[in-house]
Length: 207
Image (cartoon, rainbow, N blue to C red; front, top):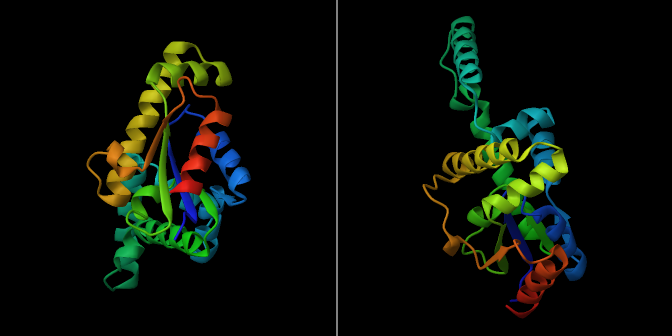
């Protein structure tokens, strides 16, 4: 069996979105990213924002508000609440993962982000790719694209990287992301998106 699905993990400022679209175009695969959240929200009967926020670390205020709301609901209902009623984010996480598996089962897809590379580890026909770059390169790109100064951009990269680590821990109980979680690691410090895409497409076609 050849490669039927390419998963692309990304770090902020590494240009993974552009590369993912180019890979999908070269392989004649679907490009899937936001659709994961859209499908999960539709299946949950919830807003897209509510499901998307599950991938972000909850703030202290939101944790307190959820706890208070769960306690009040339990008091009003006079019954024990289920885990999903107390913390609907858990069920949203399961839905996101189910949608990723569904997309992968349909094959011929490039799936960007959402931890798909970790979820689909050891799945036949899946090529797992990490697109990254050095923090300084990523900060310079963020500064240029957002108009922030370099100090602000550096803080944004640090925040995004911390959020990414928290996501892997929360979604997949992964203590540390390693290069060996991926089949291909692309560093875009030097490689242009077009070159990176051709390398990934070549790996997919010849795996």
